[in-house]
Amino acid sequence: MTQPQTPSPEILAFGEAMAMFVAESPGELADVERFQRRIAGADTNVAIGLARLGFHVGWLSRVGNDGFGTFIRRTLEAEGLDCRHLRVDPDHPTGLLFKERAEGGADPRVTYFRRGSAASCLAPGDADGVDFRALRHLHATGIPPALSPSAREVSRLLVDQARAKGASVSFDPNLRPSLWSSEADMRTTLNALAAEADWVLPGLAEGRLLTGRDSPEAIADFYLERGAQAVIIKLGREGSYYRGRLGGQEQSFTLPGVPVAEVVDTVGAGDAFAVGVISALLDGRSPREAVRRGNLIGSLAVQVVGDMEGLPSRERLTALETE
Image (cartoon, rainbow, N blue to C red):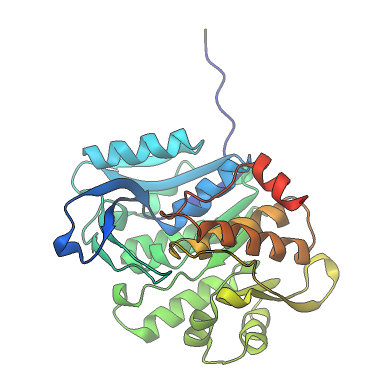
């Protein structure tokens, strides 16, 4: 008897997932003897966050034919991600990173081993099996285009196809300047992708670097003039700024951040913010409600060690939003 096929994902994310080793104690990596193994990746953080909120999320990438690749697949599937588009690359390894344990809310230093990784070898053919007709939303970031020319082609293809089939597109620059050949190339490539997105989610420093404009208002206008429907700018502790025309109504506002008793680890906070905004907009919430949820989930992320450990379930989110 033929088993029924699982429906195609309604949301698709793509990029590089890496095996991450987090120091168990503060100090320089040279002095650390014990690490905890986890997974890392801005794109997977968003995918996992949306899956925890009950969305059917697909993950498109490559991993190596090694234990770290198996670990990543098992972890993502345990989080509820649909990994039908996660391929095993027999010729290239899974990327790794080692992260220090920072103190006092400082950004931890990270050492990467990702050059020549399986995910950096993503190519347009990796998207051949995607059912764009079933796709409701695509989340893209600036990381895959920075990994290699072929991964850049995949980014363009996925964004173009998603838009052509009527799916909404979100874009978070997630700048990694060290991966680019030049700052000019980074600006040109990422601004072109942002211009194809409905919702653009830069940090303030990222927006300044990419647009050459200084204020949140001017940065937002840069992308709205190029076709975006909404620009939501992360302001760190200060909260976030919205400017856009979602729902047929043009508006702009700033919402303060959610106070936290102690900042433990800031890595992943921007991804958590994206989870909040994207999920709320897909839930049909207003822009103000979406930004408020982004601030809320972002505040959860900075209170725990790890990139995605603070991302809530739908039940916990509902409880927090009704407090």
